[in-house]
Image 1 (cartoon, chains in turn purple, red):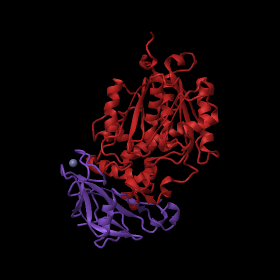
Image 2 (cartoon, chains in turn purple, cyan):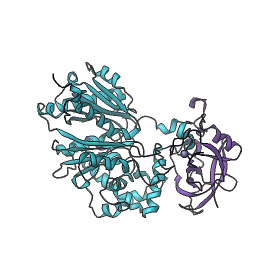
Image 3 (cartoon, chains in turn cyan, blue):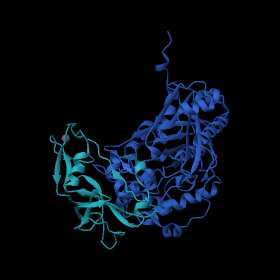
Image 4 (cartoon, chains in turn yellow, brown):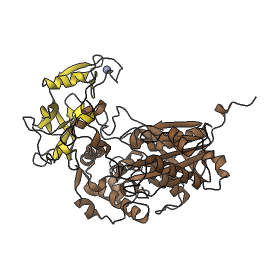
Length: 149
Length: 383
Ligand SMILES: [Zn+2]
C-alpha cells in the first residue's frame, strides 16, 4: 500500500511492520505488549532490533510485559495537525518509561482506550505519573496507549 | 623521490566566498535554479569562476545532486564530492567534508550549498502516511512534525530545571532584535515578551515563536586552501576545526527511548570539538547555534560548556553569554537547514554582520542536534 492509496483528509498514519517489528504488532493485535529482551545480558530493548546493542547478541526474545510505567515526558498536540486529527485537538501524547526501563510513545487515553480531548491539565498529567497500557483503535489499527492510574 | 601527495602536509581550508539569495515565502524558481545562482554568487564573492571549481559537497536532503549542479554550471571535473545525511544536522558536517577535501589535497576549490523551497513547497511531514522504520512507532501518534520531537525534549528540561516560558521567550525576542537590524531577515516586526507569551501553542510546551520560519532560500559558500586564498584579495575565514557526533542509540528527532534522556548529540560533539581545536568556550566570541526551535539555544550553551548543566537560564538572563544567532537565525531570519548560520558565522569573522560583535577571533557554529550532527569553529587567524 502506498501513500497514494490513502485519503489524506481522513487517513491516520499507518504503522508499516517489517520482519523485525511484526511480532510487536502481532502482539498488539492480540492485546499483548511485547518488548524484546536480550537472552544473554537481560537488557530490555526498544525500538525493536535484530541484535542486542549491549553485547551484540543476535535474536532478542519477544517478552510480554505488564505495560505499567510512568510518564517520562509529554506534549499537547495543537494545530496545525494532519487533517484527520482536526476534531481531536487538543490531545496528549505521552513518552512512557515502562517499569522494565525502556521508553515508548502512546496517546493519553481513558480506561477503555479512547483518546481524551484535553490539554492534560484536568487529568494532572505530569512527569512521574503512573500509567497502564490500553489499546486505542485508530481507523482499524490498534495502537498501544496509556491511561493514568 | 618526492613524497606522495597523499602524505603531503595538511593545508588549512578557509571560506573565501559566501552568497545568499533574498529569503522569501516564494522564490519563484526551482531549487536547482536558486542553488545554482547562490553558487555563482559565492564564486563571484571569492573572485573565482566555475572553471576553478573542483569539489562539491551537499546535504543529502539537498534536492540537486553534485552531478546535476556541476552539469548545470559547467564544472569541468569534480575531483571531490559527497553528501551528508540527517536534515539540518548536515550543515557543519558538510562544510567539514569540504574542508577535509581541501586539507587532504583532494580538491582546491570546493563549494557547499543549500537551496530549499520550504516556504512555497509542502510540509514534508504532511505527506507521509505510511510509517516505516522508526516512524512506525511515532507517526501513528502524530509525533510527525519536527516540533513534536523537540517538545518532548523541552518538557524534560522544563521540569528538571524549572524553566519558565520566559527562558525560551528571551531567545525569540533576542533573535528578533537581531533580525530587525538585518534587512535580509524575513521577520521585521518587533516581538515583545508579551507577544511571545500570548502566541498560540503548536506543540505544548512550544509556542508559535519557538518555531523556525518556513522559507524559500538558497545560500552557498566557497572554500579553498589558505595559500590559494592569498592570491584572491579576500579576507579568508579559516576553518579552525570541527567535530561530528551521534551519541548512542540515536533516533532522528526522538532521541529519548533508551539510555539517553535529557541530552542531545552535542554532548558528544562538544568535547570532541574542544579537544580537536584546542579551544574552550572562553575563546568563542560569537555563537551561531542551530535553532529550529528556541530550546536548542540554552541547551547548546550548557552542552558546549559555556555554563554548567541546568544553569543556562540564569547565565543568559545575566547576559554572560556571547552574542548568538546574530542574523536572526532560523527563528527570525530564515530557515534553510542552518546554512544561514554558517554564512552569518563567516560574516562575523569578516566584520560584516548587521549585528557585528567586537574583536571577533573565533565563531562557533552548530547544526541540527536532535539528529546526528556536527559543529565547527571559524577563526580570523590561521593555525
Ligand atoms: Zn545483550
